[in-house]
Amino acid sequence: MTWNPFKKDKAQEPVEEESPAKTVGKGRPTPKMKQAQARNLRPLVPPDRKASAKAAKERIRKREDEEYEAMRTGDINRMPKAERLPWRVYIRDYVDARRNLGEFFIPVAFVMLLGSILVTTIAPQLSVPMMILLYVYLIAVIIDVAVMWRKLKKKLIEKYGEASVAKGSRSASYAWSRAIQVRRWRLPKPRSPKRGNWPK
Image (cartoon, rainbow, N blue to C red):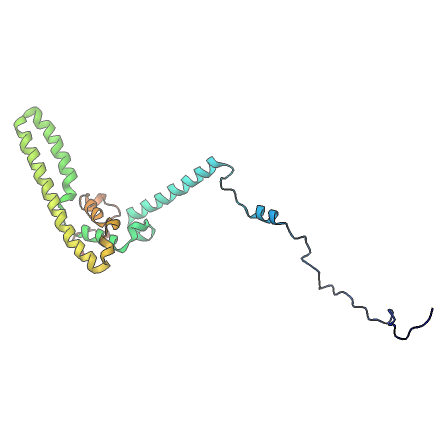
């Protein structure tokens, strides 16, 4: 074997030792695309549909009970979103502050109905006047609510703009329905125990 001066001796070459801190790759095999997609998939239909539906109903019932309790106690922060709208709060306060003829309509109509049944057996000639009185009272209620809504509508537009009285807001029907309810039966509960406290 001849010695070659231009050839480097392998024994003299420095050998780079592999640092224990350096690791080649992730240390685990890369998952295939199908495996990764399968791991991220969630079933559209739960395994036990009956149990899932029952749990969903329980959640809805619990939320409705909490909202009803909030409306009964006057806790505005836990009421349904529609009841927390600022113009609806204003409508409720305005209707609750005034004396509405309509809030006595249901009791009066019930008494008149019982009275007409009794009158037809004892004195039938009085049934017609009683029905006329009931219709007169109904017309008075309609006029009273119409006057109330006309004034309230102007205030809502001044304070909250046209959106508060638009058709989609249903503010008119909301005010009418509250005006013909007995005060103590109203939900959400009136914030003021007495009439006359007008909203600002």
